[in-house]
Image: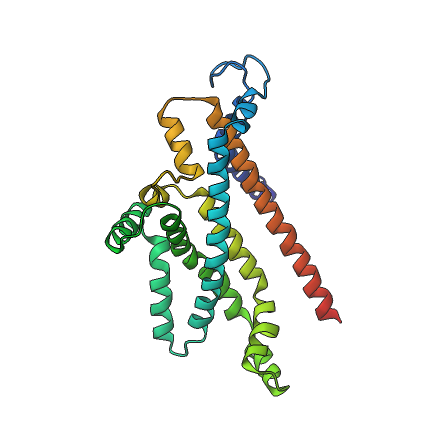
Length: 267
């Protein structure tokens, strides 16, 4: 049994090494004064200084963050309402049908989704730019939020709702004081997942961006096509650290909420 545990741990370490080795390789050479990813000549922060001095790139970073925050917030609101709607459908067949329709955007290839949005925006006369990118990110983020919130709703005991109604709570009171507080961890998880997906998306954004508007993922792709530059390493490093910060932030928020909920239960 101990041997199996050791082998499992070694295998897990090996998998993590494969996943993170290229990222740390990229981060390591972002400090290379030689300007290549072959020979490390010396430590420097020049690539980061050059990156932070690029006004156009800073505007692109701001655009990316605004799109991510707006799309995550709107998709979280819509996704929570969608999850509640699916959960409260009484017929199992209808519920499964709605859930399957929700999952279409998750399992569909990004190229197909991007091309579909491009055709739709063109037919509707919507100019490609901020609006088209925002609407696309909301569209593919909503199903993710639904998937994260729905299990928490299904996990909640119906006795809580019945008890609240017996005590005279209205439907709005049940929603705001019982249901939403209970599914808050799922809502946070959905928000942060939507935020991460928006920050990382390339395929869909590539199809629907235009009019001088772009995001970091598309810009990194454009920079890479022009040739290998350690600016890409520096930019990717900062983006990776920002994503890690989001993950750590979500972890502490979730832990704090769990402790608060545990104290309330004890009371």
